[in-house]
Amino acid sequence: MSSVSASPQTKIALYYHFAPIPDPQAVQLWQRTLCASLGLTGRIIISEHGINGTVGGPIRDVKAYVKATREYAPFTSLTVKWSDGSDEDFPRLSVKVRPELVAFDAPDEIEVNDQGVVGTAEHLSPQQLHELVENQKRAGEDVVFFDGRNRFEAEIGRFKNAVVPDVDTTRDFVAELDSGKYDHLKDQPVVTYCTGGIRCEVLTVLMANRGFKNLYQLDGGIVKYGEAFADRGLWEGSLYVFDQRMHTEFSSAAKTIGHCILCEQPSSQLRNCHAPGCRHLQVVCDQCEANHPDRICEVCASTFEDSQESSA
Image (cartoon, rainbow, N blue to C red; front, side):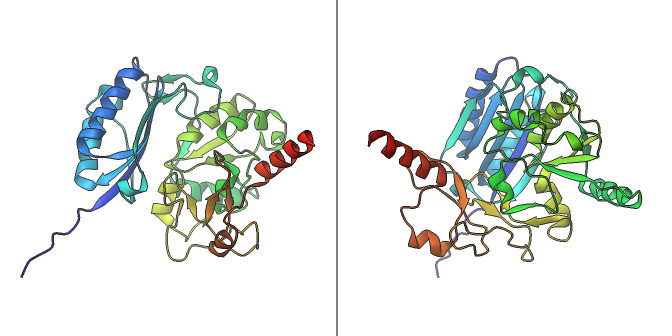
């Protein structure tokens, strides 16, 4: 009787590390060669401020990648978050050099040394976050949760009563903070959070530069919080992820807080607009996606209407 060998266990490694990089192009070439030699796919961004990546494949090969990456002196203390998934969640390998690890369009406001981002907010573990919330409650005050992600991500999952800035891209945050909308929060305890923590490393510096005095950030982001408390804590809904899965849940008890933009039924399905080149994501349930195969977002619809009016 012939035996069928089991497919290797696969994992996704998510990580970021801030450290001065004297030659980002050389690191790019090395990282691309390393991933290709191990057959890994994913997305890696390198800048003079450090590295940010998500790679997937057989767990043995991903672990080999992490070990080799830590052998480069600036990345010795790089920490990794592990997630279920595989290279199938990433169709290809992308390794790019960018001016910023996170595109806030504010590179002149960020300074990085061997300890990381200079002036970033105090990191709270998930347990310390709960302690802060309880201590503030006893003092008769609330902790403000400030979402450091794009607003569509918050449509399917967020911390209870979180402030969700009106931003479509990370580049919108500076103007949003400068608008004055959140000036009333500048003296309150504010905890920022994002998927894995990297956006908050920079966001809290931008906020501190604009007068926010009592800032914290969730260490390890939503991913680490979900590992600690799943759906038994302060998080509600699904977590948007930057691969073909689109979203993930921490347990079978996860709430569905998103609503389809077409039928308003509960859904966590984020889908791209069908207009060529548009990357605008909206919550659209399975049935409405099937019923509207040519659906386009409001932005593309208004652009189309404007073009029709101008040509009339």
